[in-house]
Image (cartoon, rainbow, N blue to C red; front, side, top):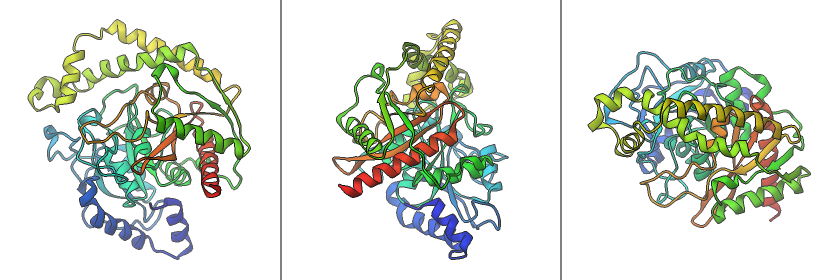
Length: 418
């Protein structure tokens, strides 16, 4: 994979020009994407910016995020060839930081259930996950150092786990969603994929203009609370092993680690996430569902058919109240620990491309709006990566990145010793 932070250092030192760094990504896409299918559109005549912390950095943008110079088709024939007049806010923030958008990455249709054609770079017989399929795969395949995705339930953290890359779902609204196709305005969150945690920090800091997100010289030893989300059922063996390895690595590195019980209110919130998501989806996709019904992607259309009229406004209001109570209960967990550690996905990437995996270990944290980082922790049978996720209090994106960096280094040391 390509390290964003390493490219920044080499460009700053003069060892590598910004144009040469960008050209390497363009060449890698040319060489590898035919087999992976991560990109659905490519930018023409790309060139590096002269200034900015992300000059020379090639970025892929999930194809539900508006770009004025390329189509935004949302994985659906309804929007085939559609060209927005303006870039999404987050795309403009990227460009203002000097990044070069080299293409649009594949997404499940409307960032929902119907999969893209992208394959997992680690094992092409398996799904890369969704909905940010192309973004995760493009980084994992070493084509680009940074990609944008979105998460409404588990669409950043889960594909990152499946493809073996680092990813962050930041605190809710740290990155703007203006110009991003809405599925659920309460949940939709823009996130990042990169090779490692330092790269995530560099990218997120540059886009958000938050220097406090950059890693410090020293890596502190966090207080870690392990949560297994028993209300979401048991994980598969591969994810259980990933969490075990991460706990072992953290303890060997000197972190304080203890198992925590999740408050009952958070379990109730986990159950309420679907209500919030599907109620809002009916409104966000009302035009497509009512005027383009036959052209709707089949799995999404079936879900909208199934839930039509079944979620009343009173149900939605109560689900939001439960979510608010869950957020308050979750906040108390962080009185005694710095971060939580849990599963990123139920297991390794499922075989086949018909489905993109299960969101059950992700959706609570999206509803809670807290920052989450995936770190690869284990390689299962078939060369399939499995990650764990580090979670911090709402607004503590600097803290979650610091703790994830600690975990990443701890796991690397343990692997080197083994």
